[in-house]
Image (cartoon, rainbow over all chains, first blue to last red; front, top):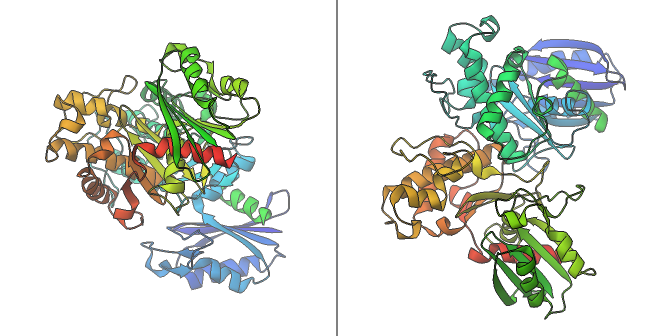
Length: 284
Length: 284
């Protein structure tokens, strides 16, 4: 069987599947200390005969196989996990099992590329818009990595003229994540995104920022498709707004695919990440 | 010998070199009509025994080898060149000579990667800041292409608080190119960049925009180095300003190399493009 870990800052999702990637069993484990959390992970996986493990981790992580600290979680504010050799701990427990290790957004991008909304595309940008904003990118069918992984959730947005919210990012205040992630919505409007009226101006402002994300992605990466996942992407009314604002700010400058096929919601829903991690396991 | 064409909107630079890439002969030809300009190009190259031709072209171009219009200049405002089969014309005249075809900024990026300021790096972003702003990118030693080439000169900048210039880009008004290319400097300050006092606030404002370009490049591509070329890059006082503003706006969010090795001026000067085109010819 294939095994997958989607390691988040609040919970770990573990799953196993047959070779058809249908999830056979799944367990949610709270993220506490490495010892406690990984202990529960091993108890779960030890029930199965596992060929390979795919891991998508919260970060920042060192995902460069040539680095001395490959497989580590590095400078996370979750102190128990700072400089923790995550992949090393997995390999120590499963010395004869193949592993793949990348970011949480990269596994979701890979899932969408192989089985989700981006099937048949070669260059796939995937954003998660939830408690934070992250982007994973598939270039020519491979997970993209430069010197490190992209961190596209933090570019400096141009402010919507009606938006006076100060911004919620501890590093950049009013960057994309600071203006458009879940906490920004909640602080600006006094309620969670899921409780905001679909006709509220909140969504026009949100769309303006996600349109800028789409524009920068187009200009820097020139992907075949841009997929939005995460909690905020469940607001279906957002997509027509993102598309129309994107077309307006891009101003016909570069040729893009038909826009309703270009800026799309996640196809695998909340399973994009765990499915991508299973698919990565299968590649090993 | 290797041959190279750096095809610009106002002039073509043609050069030939031996295998050590020292330029043996060079000719500047005005960009008029394809027939006239390429006629002069052929007259120049016909003097030499040429093994391969590398071409870096103004655009937009179709640089996708799988496309039916590979090698064409596409929607340029220079009407005589619209939908012109540039590479086809070269191949028709030199049917037994190997060719390479990419953008003007990509050849310059390749030149800097192989013999310029970015030697020894794998992931190299190169900006030209002149009459326009364009970026070429080398990823893992290869010219990067997604669906098309990047067009990173046109993202929406955050305005400097002291800058009230309306912006000079016909597509986006106050995008990066609209605020930071040569024409923006000239329209904002009433004189060309080369005539503006090195102590003028002009350079602090310019640096703020190029720092945003560096930040977006870091967040989307995670390169090993960012090289700035073109006329504006000849202002040496600009680089300490870009670096300090970059550090300020990035806010230690991602780890980058030592900053004076990370944001650097072009190493090959005005020869980056033509040298890159010779190097691309040699790869064929």
